[in-house]
Image (cartoon, rainbow, N blue to C red; front, side, top):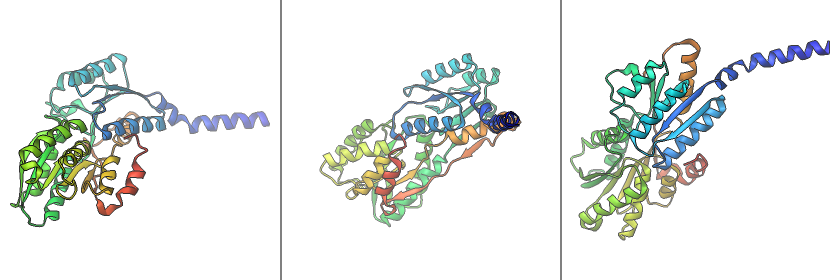
Length: 321
């Protein structure tokens, strides 16, 4: 009798974990852009956590912000015969050939946090992204409300040239301030999404704009560039967050630290958990063959100094940023 019970128990456990066993059989190759920002590091960290939760073997290739490295990694994943490929594309164009190779190998491709321009949407299964135009628009609308009709010259730190977030966050911000003739973007230059480049470019803006005295606000396409720019503003003898308003996108821990110290004013959140929804979409596709929606949108949220930034900093700082 005891032996029979043990057999039944073992059978029940095996059935209960059958789904996990199937997930554990999956190997996913992830062509990650690099680690150019705190947000990007968090995305990588959270992707590993989400894969581990599901028992998925996740192979990450760091492209060091070079498309040629991503294309090489994707071809490597195809040669290995992985079950799926995730791509955070460094730029929007130039993917058709390598994605056609993946399709011919019957390997589904999912885009994470960035979109691409392609001759055929059939080359990828779905894209898990935020609405990056909306992010920029929220930042612009916040500035319109905050300056309340006051003349405001804005300097803009753009992301990587040709990347979809840079294109869309610029477009969205311009839409957000379109109704306010008092707000003008006077200077706009790429800071390549990095803290060091953001600082360097901001130093040039400050010199060109009367030592920064003619600048009302900084809009940065990501928080890391904003943090670099904040340092440049302080070194110029001005008070970031007061003399120059600072609004950016991503909601990484360091921007909340700056907000708690009065050195930044607002940020629009970009969740680092793109992989979780991507793994779920992949599993459903593998289970029943039904393709997910072509776009899976993640949530964005505006944070200001009124949102207890010190508390948010403590909550976020352990996520790998």
